[in-house]
Image (cartoon, rainbow, N blue to C red; front, side):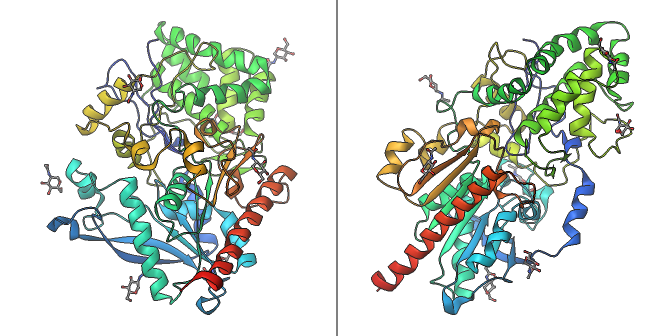
Length: 504
Ligand SMILES: *[C@@H]1O[C@H](CO)[C@@H](O)[C@H](O)[C@H]1NC(C)=O
Ligand SMILES: *[C@@H]1O[C@H](CO)[C@@H](O)[C@H](O)[C@H]1NC(C)=O
Ligand SMILES: *[C@@H]1O[C@H](CO)[C@@H](O)[C@H](O)[C@H]1NC(C)=O
Ligand SMILES: *[C@@H]1O[C@H](CO)[C@@H](O)[C@H](O)[C@H]1NC(C)=O
Ligand SMILES: *[C@@H]1O[C@H](CO)[C@@H](O)[C@H](O)[C@H]1NC(C)=O
Ligand SMILES: *[C@@H]1O[C@H](CO)[C@@H](O)[C@H](O)[C@H]1NC(C)=O
Ligand SMILES: *[C@@H]1O[C@H](CO)[C@@H](O)[C@H](O)[C@H]1NC(C)=O
């Protein structure tokens, strides 16, 4: 296959490039998907106060430079808190690979359950993202080379969270308040790992759509695109076939005289750079993110979308309104993702804006987060291709001059034989997964023990449980949230019981 989609993305971040030549790196950020106008949402309601904490640069070293510090941002909401005197709980969101306000604004579950639990809400930003940037808060310096980027890792982030939580509890004289951690996607992985590594700091974790098993030699590199394929194919066989056959057609058209011009016209692409690969990447992004956020109600997480957007895309393909040729159908489908608001005048394939500051993920994907997602078997809705670890290595060498450590995460946090291992070791973790979410293939889908529970929603997408609720939510989603609340309540009451009976 000529041009593969080598996908190094995480929750919201795709990094694509052609596998032919590493030097020819396509737009690293297809953020035409993330619209700046969404940021306006944040200013409408005050949901929290912003604070900063002086954090240690390197928790795992005692050489002089490790003692440097940086300002770590966290958000706090004490409106519902029952207070330290009551040992009322503290809910902490373990921030992901982006600025923390975006995640806080999309984690309605914590705001909506806080009154019931009388919980204090805290959202901690991950180092190197948003405003929590080491080396004086200057991104250009912090991201300048491997010596500075070296401090960006999941283990450092977890140690930051531990340090900050302990200090915050001390300041609030709330040392006996139970802490529950929450997270979605990479943040969910961090929440689960935090519970395993820091059981003295948190009593339990809600890890939503956290693909802790999506690592090399643990989850098939085909599973991600298999699930996207299933999402579309189960909507309609025609929809699947039209998309599947289109890749060849796009490639062939691009090679004809005037072909690129025709493609640009068909897809109403702005008069800037276009080639067949960038168009394919642009379409891939639309399908993949739509599958990820195939929510039952309208959303505006990655991009403003209608309810059940995969269904809407297939509708655009099955009942086209602008023409009956393949490109007209695909154009209709792309409109669902890129133009739900109806305000796009043309589509900018070269858009590399990054309003949520997600770009640090490419470093993480080149060091420890080797999460294979872009294999495609014969049946895939995308062109067949194999996943090769060597492609990742080549990219990382080129981009950062660094060699990944593909097995570090499973060495540090485990993953192999997870059911057997955690059955006799861990406790109090909820793994939520929605099976429409392509990341669910790397999630924990089976119950491990009485207190390490897998909640699996056939109809669910990427951390749908954490979203703000709405009147239109289907019953299965209400039930999921109810079950999560019940389990968390059990952890907390067990904690109070133990505190009364066993603490010295
Ligand atoms: C906490 O969140 C609620 C919304 O759930 C909001 O009404 C309130 O103003 C917030 N409190 C603070 C201190 O920001
Ligand atoms: C890396 O970047 C930092 C900050 O810009 C600089 O001080 C340092 O000399 C650089 N190191 C190397 C090895 O280039
Ligand atoms: C705790 O209080 C100290 C002293 O005021 C302050 O420097 C520190 O940032 C506070 N910790 C947190 C987590 O806010
Ligand atoms: C995955 O497993 C295969 C077969 O055991 C092995 O050859 C390969 O090195 C492993 N990959 C990594 C990145 O460890
Ligand atoms: C597509 O073809 C069908 C059947 O041939 C026809 O009914 C429909 O009007 C056509 N749609 C467009 C947009 O041309
Ligand atoms: C976006 O949608 C609106 C409303 O349907 C339409 O008028 C406009 O042409 C679309 N933009 C593009 C680039 O197709
Ligand atoms: C795990 O156990 C809970 C009950 O504790 C149950 O509701 C849930 O369906 C089980 N999950 C799976 C994937 O079987």
